[in-house]
Length: 360
Image (tube, rainbow, N blue to C red):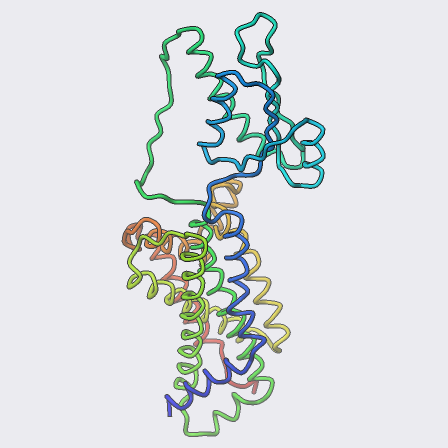
């Protein structure tokens, strides 16, 4: 009986093509978008270079820009051309190296110029930082000065990680959250509206078997989701996966169970499928932007970050990133596991207390 119900649930999910499309491809859209911007490259933007000097210093600066791989360099002929390209959003900033820059003659120009759009100042900030570092080094060499104070960079890990890796792990949690919370809450509310759940109470089928089949069939969908996201992120955009997949996948599916339980909580509090849709959206949208899917939580105001770190998605993402990017145990920081387990138990207890097959 269970397997027949399980396979029929899978068939229903597969036949609901619109829901399956959004469940599978909505997070995939984010993967592709962020992969196109941040995958396979560490470039922060496109910089137009107007190089009119052939001095050793100017040539060295040109080579250093290329070797840094911080920017995609486009060669331009004039400042006017650079401004025109910037208006068309073809470049984010421009660097003008005037004629004679770097020469030893008394009247030779001693500065370069950056041109940027105030609406896209981030690339210019990175460019200014790079130029300051390079020209400071040149000034020391020209004055035969010895460096006394310097910067030593210490990486926490010897692994190569990018911003896309951070986002890819976040998209895994996002996919589970959206499909599980919205899927379960709307489906259960719709079943109740259509009296399907009431009919089940008149059959020999135990309610627990029905719910278990529903949960497991959606876990299959979740497994397909995360498999597609990881394959696309890794093979198309060079996303890194350093952890053990035999640990990562069960962890992610445990997160799916958490969000399905939250879906049951919403279904138990909603009178209609439309109400469930609204409540689920009101829950998932804030978590999408506040719990570290796209940006680290520590960028939020301190009072807000101290609150959102306890939302269910935040500790789950911290554990996913520990396993996926750092190859360490998800229980390295037991606080994360405690918060996730607390949410699972809390959602389970509320579901048992409030969820009913009928309104009667």
